[in-house]
Length: 287
Image (cartoon, rainbow, N blue to C red; front, side, top):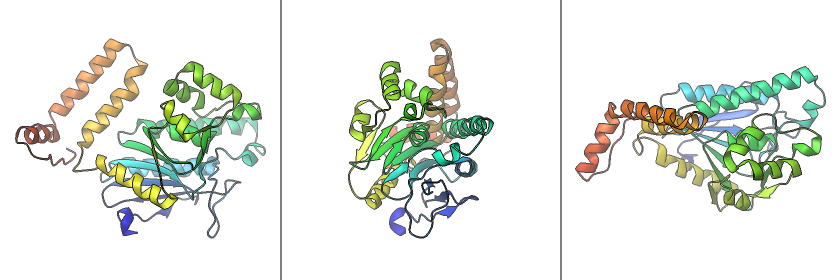
């Protein structure tokens, strides 16, 4: 798989998520399950429905990427060509107690918050439909890229008599505004990737086959790897953008100043400024 930067994926403990790191430092987390949320068999392609076991696999993969100093970008995607993720397994939800459901949502919240708060840039590559909990996972990413004409997005939980309870109501409201988020959730409407782009829910739409899409997403992610970008600066920008809107504006400015002061003391800032003055391309090291 040399055309994918040497990417080789290995299953996480529950065989519901595949994980690998490219030669240039992109950690790929691939959701992979059947409609019941069980591991795929043979050449099966997933709707990538998730259970508690898959969320534990996602958690394991996120922590691996966090602690790997060679990883600078995380890319989330789904197995196959039809689904990023169809959301939580309804079969699972129908078979467990209300107490289990509550703790399932709590653990999913914790996992997606861990993903959201990691200092590394997280990009969701939506290779197909991202509905319900699938969109909730994607919204925990920093940037979302979708494959043209490959699917729809939405939070249709209202049709089950519940709400999007693993970050859906909170993140969608923050991403697109209260009024439109409310409308989408109370109607349960699924919208095209193009409509999602118009709402600033999707950042970019790429054309091509599923294989082309994955390759193009990895190519796009590569611009944020070393030596192309100062990864400490990317992490500090992310921290300011994630934390700042939740605190008073003057505190956000103070946070921004502290993050900037830390960067001014970095070797990459010295390199970036020197490269600009010397009219050459900066060679960032991540320090």
